Image 1 (spheres, one colour):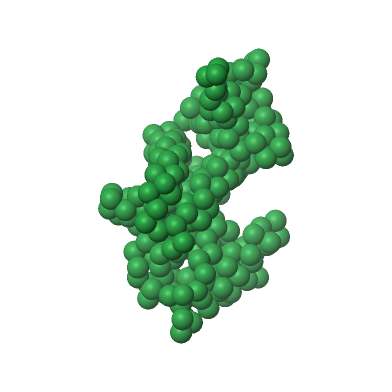
Image 2 (cartoon, rainbow, N blue to C red; image 1 turned 90 degrees about the vertical axis):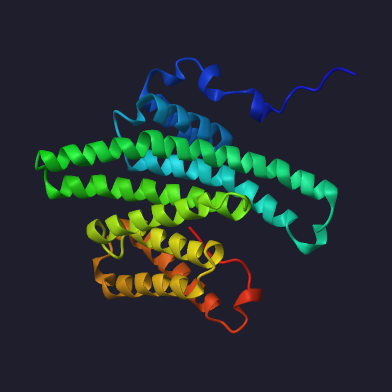
Length: 277
């Protein structure tokens, strides 16, 4: 019997097989959009990884590029997290085959998270921090500085998210819990100084940080306080929501409120999983 080849996902690499794809930044962005439309999220990750490694440090990603990066990895990691949750139910307890299968998924999860975290901590965050430092030193316009701080909050939030994913799956490494909490805190401190309470990135950060408190740190009171404060602050500034982000902001506010209802219900421990961005 001929030896079976590896899967197409593992074997092919869009960034090396397509002629001149990496010769221009716009080629990579175009193909990332195309891969998203085709729901080829593994390809999308490869394209965005190439873009970050090739140009992300010298020339910061714009809003669309940041979102493409986030969407790509969120979809790839999301399927693995869903698979792991499916295999973690009581029906599959104490089954050696299932445990072995789960360990394979955990290895994939770990690899993907480490890949994203490397892009964030080695390239994207240092690049934005340098840009912010130079902008302040040169007394650039406050509007330009706020845009750089927005990017920094985005990347720190994303870093906290992937440490949280690792913490929920790999229980043997408590550093992941600490890293998630500390990164979210750093992002929140910057967000409070630079983003409006209604900004979707600040709201999304509050949503995910509160979920981290509830599900990872097991601190229900802190989770509820964080979610309630973020929701109340946004309600107080509802008139300031930018028209372009109104849908995103109000959706996250609804998720915050839904979580608060869930977490404060009498049978909170038996309720379904909480909402995160």
